[in-house]
Image (cartoon, rainbow, N blue to C red; front, side, top):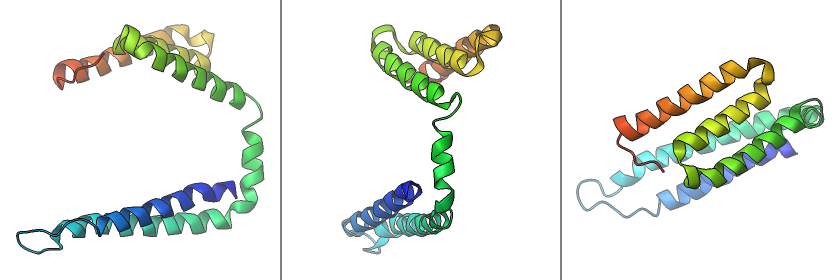
Length: 147
């Protein structure tokens, strides 16, 4: 039944989206329902895809127990826990030391957790280059102010 949570969530989201879409104000120029067409199309498409997703998950619900058991075996609990701790540290450091340095530390830590210490050089190079390219792209090229 856990598998059905996401499809049901998306069905409810699509229904709420459609309800709010049909509450949009009418247009004063041209077709009064014009502003509702595109959002309604997106809402109906989301509802259709969510229903198909729900049906598919309903058919596969028997496989659920094996997938849940796999979450608690091997390295998976360690990876999940480490990632959550690194995310908390990242959010704490982000405002204090800025985007560039906190992203280097976060990505470097995450790469060390996933790849291990044997690939230390690749982990450091990827963390530094990716963080610098991201910072440069947003800060310099797109003129987005980053902390």
